[in-house]
Length: 629
Image (tube, rainbow, N blue to C red; front, side, top):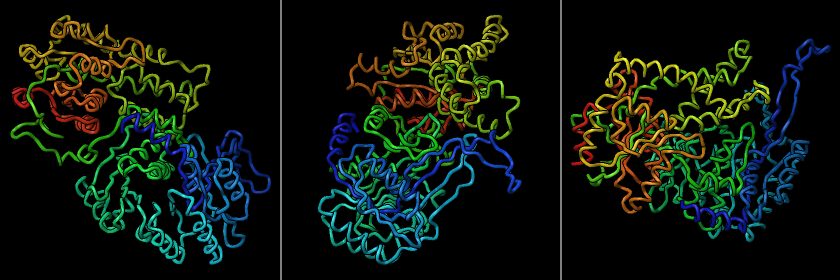
């Protein structure tokens, strides 16, 4: 969705009127501090001291919270709470957000407010305490709840039906009465999100996740490919005769209505994520957009952006403001073809070659501007940088406590670092180090006064990396290694062939520009690029690959953007090419052998939007025939 259209939609939402009927829950976060534990005199057991406690609305409450944060003009809650402190806290939190709680009824007997109490120790959630699992809805309460909703219908643009817990308001009798109410008001827009009873809300638009949908239709969500998932969404639309939003977690959302099935790819989130409440956030975004007349595809895009904001808010059921939605929606990175990316057996190759056709072959064979990433795409001088960055980041996060840290903490840090490196491969080093600063602060093992900035961490990393790279370049200079030992197979031959064709060549990298030029010179192809070499310049806002693509588009005009061809082994250059409308060749190179396929890279590159995948340039003539003949 264009940024201006998104902004206009969020402005319209400010005048919308939405009702939420459902299971209102409360998430209670207890942050434990084991350092203050003592032995109880009465029981002899160690205590579990709570340093801080925090309350956050969950389930239908989280939906309401998100709608309020987005700026929805009027909100009404319809549900049941208990006569207990948690119920009063829920009601107060909703009221403080301007939600009308007239329809939030108190049942004094056989009802405990729904609460998820979540103790956290050392950034890890412990065993949860749940309240409300034995509730019984009284017939009088159910009747009064439906009366409240019916009375409010004329003033509402859309009604959300939320069902999350088995022992909540959605009894068999209540579901039947609610369905009758929905069918009796076809002029109203209802959207249902039900964990257990999705098939029972006739007349409603549905938001349903993959696991729930597959279970309902008797399938196995884990075994489905993209065509089977589309078939599942189509079957649900035919079954219910209303639009279906089939959500797939980090893999995005499929929208199916009378116009067919369309995909909203999942967002690529580089920061740590907490998926708790993401489904509620997605629902809130979809509902708010539908309430002001957005079509289902636009609504799904808004929902994905809302969820993309909230999952980055840790240890809370977060919300997304209009400003945050606009920020993430300005230039979002998405994950494409996740099923193909993770299922190598589904690869389709150009006949008698190792060239994988991911999307389609180019419509023309007249590329005029070709951009190459450097490390891993052409050069292997920096092969093994991950083995230097990972321990360096782990040491930075744990600080002096590295040796004394327990195995669980150390393993958690290592896993977080590996995940972060995997997601940020191809970014300039300074940007990666800025993310490291956030990781150091997140784990809180290092005193704030000892936390370095991104420049400080970059120096530590570069000093260690330079020792490895300089050792290789000295061997190259002494003749102990040759160019073929330090480049991907046939890389130099490919560059020279393209140069002879008269193609304009560019070199772009997250490596510092000075180092990039020196290494290209050592490897014998510096002169092929002229002044068209772009590297990092010590400014995290200067993203060489993104800015280069924008510069070329300015030079040759948007109408000829399909003249741009990009080769890269990292997600950054592939994503930017995909977004700008160029053609992207993902080089899934094995940098140790300098030829052959790296499956992990293949996965990353396909998800980033690669059109072709090659392991190296050993079949350069077949590749050039596909791209230029």
